[in-house]
Amino acid sequence: MNAPRSARRGRIAPSAAGYLMLLPALAVIVLLVIVPMLVIARDSFAISDPLGGNLGGFTLDNYAKLIDPVYLKTLGYSLGMALLNAVVCTVVGYIVAYYIATRRASLQPVLLVLVIIPFLTDFLVRTFAWITLLGSGGPFISLLRAFGVDAQSLVPSQLAVTLSLLYAFLPVAVFPIYASMRSIDPSLKEAAADLGAGWWQTHARVFLPLSASGLASSVMLTFVPTLGVFVIPVLLGGGKDPLVGNLIVTLFTEFRNEPLGAALSMVVLVLMLASVAGAGLLLRNGARRNRATRTSAAATGATRTTATRKAA
Image: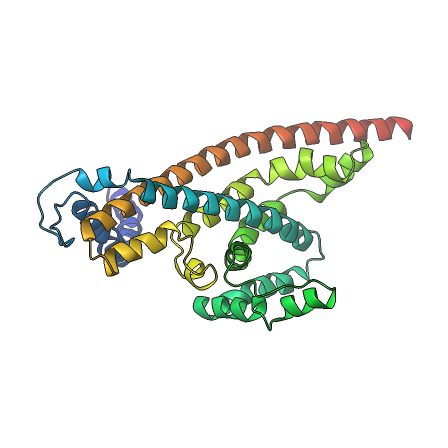
């Protein structure tokens, strides 16, 4: 009787120790994420005085004020820029990830390090570097002038903002796509070629379906943080078309309207959660397609092997 009880204690003890080891991480998440989020949520329903101060109480006026065309225009522009950046980063990230995944195994870590290198530099420093590159005396303008194009400084401009966002979030887009491509059997590419599929058909029918989970993760990891970016639009866009992150900062720091800024923050949070939920659905559908594609590919490979044996 003692032996089974001691065995049960041995099984329970590691579980309890594991939960105890999670307590510091849970404490950090609660104190630095959940509690501030609850404070912002509470302030979003608070009553504000004529100067924007927080008077407490409960009201829905803060959310009603966000229906103003000024706020809706900024929110719509932010969603459009976030979607554009997510699409551009995913397309470019797919090309980069495919190139890395198809190189020899010894070269792939080196290429991945090259992708990580931009993260070793401060975000603000990288943004100022783009001001130099796209400025009137930068290499881009000099190159355009060498080809006879009378170009001026690209800063501030929408193109500068787009290029800087691509540069800032491209590494985040590459890694999930690369991880999904690493799990793709290289023989599937050969099987597609044997069946007469060209480069485009191979990617459309093999690589894209099998890397759908990585593509969905890439879209989510670029779309969500782009909504909160506020440095790039100010420095490279001149602040003419601010993103919602710039508007939130302005409401908190310049207008001192904490309740309205908190309400806008909660709206952005809901949009982010909706995008994460959408990405989750895409990941689930991608997993189903992966299983169907792998099953079909396995059946094709078995048929080809049988035909080869009969021919031999």
